[in-house]
Amino acid sequence: MLFDEKEKKLLTLTRDDPNNPLASYSKHAFVLDDFEWPSVEHYYQAMKFDDAEYREKIRQAPHPAEASKLGKSKAHKKRKGWHKVSVTYMTRGTYIKCRTHPEAAQMLLNSGQREIKDVSQYDYFWGSGRDMRGDNTFGKMLMGVRNKLREEMNKE
Ligand SMILES: Nc1nc(O)c(N)c(N[C@@H]2O[C@H](COP(=O)(O)O)[C@@H](O)[C@H]2O)n1
Image (cartoon, rainbow, N blue to C red; front, side, top):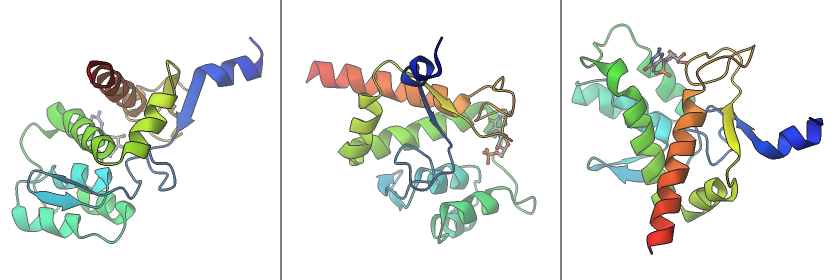
């Protein structure tokens, strides 16, 4: 397959690109679970913790990268079973962002049926890793949200 053909079938991004409206680092604020979140990353990282004060500290972080750093804290206990629900929280945040910001939803819908890959080289969970054999959980999550938005659009 020619390189151009492959490109047409694939949408690539990284979760931590603040300039990409589909990334969790994009500064698209939304309201969820009674609070306003500056980005999906802020929401996702805060949801790791039961401690309301620490959640608030994450919510107020000046940048999604800072929220991510706070989310890695070993000094604060993560909620029980976090890894079982982490993708659900990333999905919820991303879906509500898209419902709040139609231009982000449109961008996702405009990707049609293309496969979406998070090409983060050092992340084999959210991304595809250096060898593109990673789980690509972030890309898969976006494709799931895209399906849901498309279904809703077809119902309206
Ligand atoms: N295996 C696995 N399961 C999950 O549910 C995860 N969230 C991760 N995350 C990995 O750890 C890094 C930092 O975690 P967060 O993104 O802050 O959750 C991340 O880059 C993944 O590699 N791993």
